[in-house]
Image 1 (cartoon, rainbow, N blue to C red):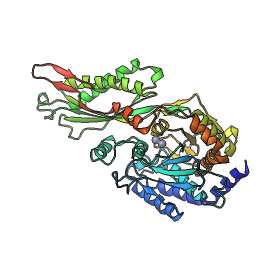
Image 2 (image 1 turned 30 degrees about the vertical axis):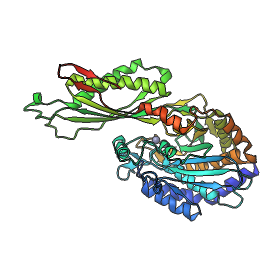
Image 3 (image 1 turned 90 degrees about the horizontal axis):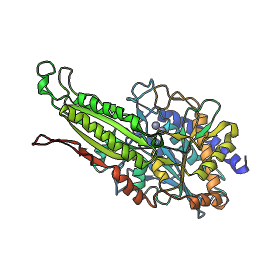
Image 4 (image 1 turned 90 degrees about the vertical axis):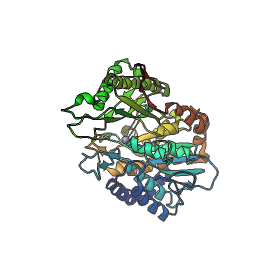
Length: 458
Ligand SMILES: [Zn+2]
Ligand SMILES: [Zn+2]
């Protein structure tokens, strides 16, 4: 370790209790996307106590109120801006033994924000900013998990948000303006022998809310007067499942619908069935193509039963395309902290989950790696943070190692990364324009007076 790295380790160790306390408190107060008010309250109090001035998303006069904030730690020396992101949200998973109001941090995001708080505190320790240039933007972002799609749709309709994901919403609001590079460390279960893992990227996604509508009637006395929306939904999903053999490995498509249940008694023919799903894939083109096929299948189920189906498609997340030279730098930062044997960055591996870090990778060099210390399955009822020293404290240290690599030494390496990176889209506006192709709100099946049934997909 260099003397700079030794200082970083010491500075983070000095504020370790702050990190560990935050991990426990936020674990006990899980909140899903765009409702993380207690969590942000906890953080705001501590960031302000450290002397930071925050730009808060709930105090922006130009946009609706959502949780989340950022602040810049400025070295006072001109140079690039590196953003350290952390996600505020938990998940609905009522059967987790430690769920609170049906929610748990079973993706470990509470560990990220705890690390971010530790980074903020460590940057205030003596000598922490010496030898650096540029700025470090510390960002607490809401709503990474693409869930509760109906609720998000409501927020959209009210004009509070435009995007389901917190990062594209923050991009839209200009909170990433002036940022040159971005990093995030996510918790994971990597076993006891590995501290940091990583891949070359992951699938993106389109978010879908599907509503089948039929007609209610007495299920025993007069089923002939009803149109069973549940059965129509089941047929639509059956057709989607039968399409799976037409999917190609190269597109890495995932389709995982959940039926949201009926809101009537057992002796009533259900007149409505809602489904939420994503279509995930490795490229925007692949996702759009296969999404159209799934919509056709969903429409077929409705037409078979005489029901209707309304589909609301929204841009989800872009695929994550990490910038390889930056990932290499991150790998080295991990190795410097814990040694080569405890780091496993596989630049050939592709993840099939999605994250709105993907949206960030569309306009700037950005990387996400994973810190071990959890046990059980991510998004599972057996997920716990076993070792917050590894998941949170190590995450704080390694991200400050990255700060040192990117912004130390006159930002020589950071500038190389920024200059070498060729963004898939020249600007956020161009990116948003491109993903608007996934936007659709439509009744797919129409029954015409002349007896024809019209299915339209666009
Ligand atoms: Zn997750
Ligand atoms: Zn996550």
